[in-house]
Length: 98
Image (tube, rainbow, N blue to C red; front, side, top):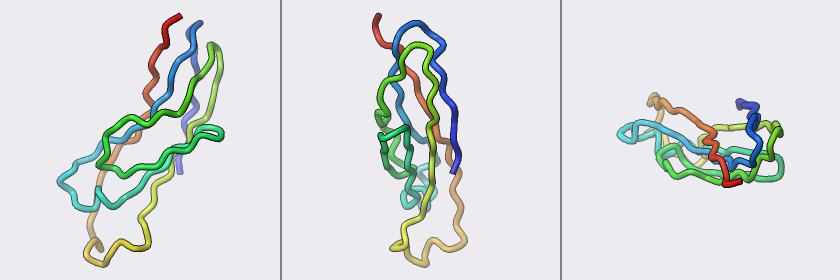
C-alpha cells in the first residue's frame, strides 16, 4: 500500500484520475489487481488496463490522499510462481474549465 498526497494549487477545481502502466508482455501483469481510494471513491483494475479511472474532483486549494493497493487474487494458479512484473501507478490531474 502506498499513499500519495495530492494538492490542488490552482484557483479552479481539478479532476483526479488513477491509472497504471506496465509491460503487458509480462503474463503476471494481467493477474495483479490494483485499487485506488480517495475518500469514499474506490476504483479497481488490473495492471494491464491503461484506462484512466475517475476519483472525483479536488477543489481549489484542497489536499487529498490517494491510496493505492496491489493484490494477487487467490484464484491465480501456480503457473505464475516465480514470475515478476513491474508497474507504475499514477494520479492524473486535469484542470477543469473555470
